[in-house]
Amino acid sequence: MKRNPGIIDVSSVRQIRQWFDTYLDTFDMHDKELSENVTLKREHTIRVCNEIDWLGKELGLNEAELVMAWVLALFHDIGRFEQFRTYRTFVDMISVNHAEFGVEILKENSVLAMLDNTTEEFIYKVISYHNRPSLPDEETPECLFFSRLLRDADKLDIWYVLTSYYSRTDREKNRAIELNLPDTPGVSPGVYEGIMAHRVINHYDVRSLNDFKILQAAWVFDVNFHPTFKRLNGKAYLEMIRASMPESLQTDGIFAMIKSYVTQKISNGNSPCSA
Figure 1 (cartoon, helix red, strand yellow):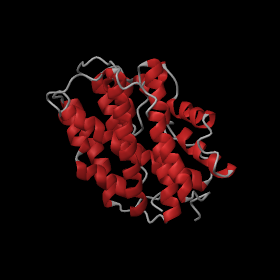
Figure 2 (figure 1 turned 180 degrees about the vertical axis):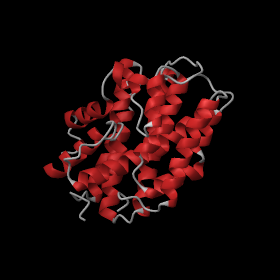
Figure 3 (figure 1 turned 120 degrees about the horizontal axis):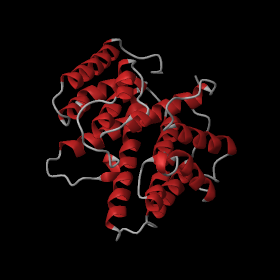
Figure 4 (figure 1 turned 30 degrees about the horizontal axis):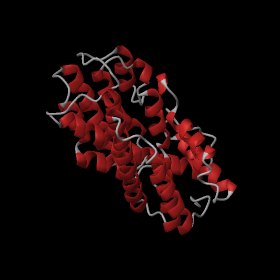
């Protein structure tokens, strides 16, 4: 299958990376809260670039496909920076859809104008899909492949960021990460029903930090590639999320079920989406 809808040459890659760095320099790093969260998302972006490169190589992508994947990773969260500067939150529901906002920023700044129209529109489309609850069935195989690739790489690093934060005993509360949710025990009914149905949790059902952590664990139901499951398991991200939560037989059962799902996916070998 031809997976890359366009070629991005070396000079274009150089311009793209230069624009990214210059754009981030426009944010006031003397504003402590803004500075912390711009840095958080900048570092996340670079790590997603690394994760997607690793995942692409595991799946046997060629050089042109790896370049496309890198560009998608670099720009997937470009809307996050202005989102936080303007709204002081990363919660799309009370601000803007950060993926669609990012596409607007790229268009307004003509960042991809050096690419042919087909390649440019392909990049916009994959970025706009990366945070959707699910992907549209009617899309092309190329678009679905790169969308799944980006979504897996993004999840891997978000799990890293969250578990690093949860495991720090000396951490200061970051409301951008915890979404100002109350740290109360128990699991909301909508969250429990979703997890038992093996589906990604709807943000509207989240009522507490516990719910939010279960939502993060439930992302396994939207993992697409076998190497992603193996990396998730090897890094023990699920175990670290569980360790950050109060003792509860109900929560133990939820995480045992999720762990069993991941183990089965690994033992089954490559998923249908692995190539």
